[in-house]
Amino acid sequence: MKMYEAILAILQKKGTATIPIICEEMNEQALQLAQDRTRLLEASYIKTVISRNTELFVLNDDTVSIRPDKEPMLLIVELHGYPGPEQRVRIDFTRNTFTYFEWHLDSRAPGPIKTESFGSVGELKKKLYSVKLWDWQDDYHTEGIIVDGTSWSVTLKTKGKTYKSKGHEAFPKEWHELCRAISKLIGIKFSC
Image (cartoon, rainbow, N blue to C red; front, side, top):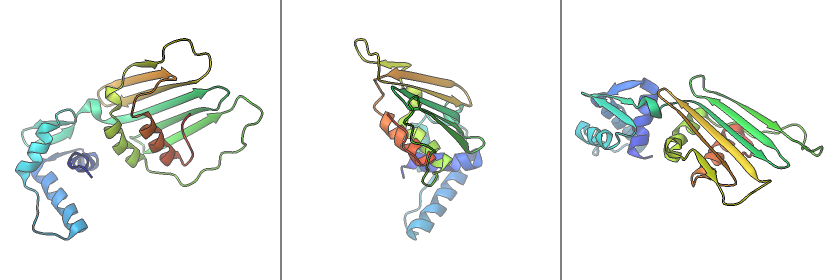
């Protein structure tokens, strides 16, 4: 786990925290995992990591929080392909729930959806920080006219902003990583 991911996990659990509290919690976690008491993190190191990640963190005196425009509240992802299926997933991070909808145009639809085990909304939330949806372009498209193909849209609502991105037969480089994370969450394949 990267250092900023560990800090995010602590802040998601606590809301806001001071650097000494973050340092203490990270050292406790390190001790539980490695049982190595000789390599404890110092508060100055934690503060340096936070100061270098101003894209994700707000530092006010010694109190740290996640930037409101980077703290996910709701994610909606839609896929439309010809002849189908159409897939939609809505993930509510505040309630820790998701809904999945699949619709087929043809009469050869596979029948009831069979799911494997469900994943964790919290794990998907962690993955959002690495795919950086807030950096995606508004629109992805290929050159020329495409009648068929896959259309998609993503809406991410955070505490401070709403990000929207869409495309037709063109995807951001992190698209497959996002689809794998959603597939793991819902227990069935989510992609074109």
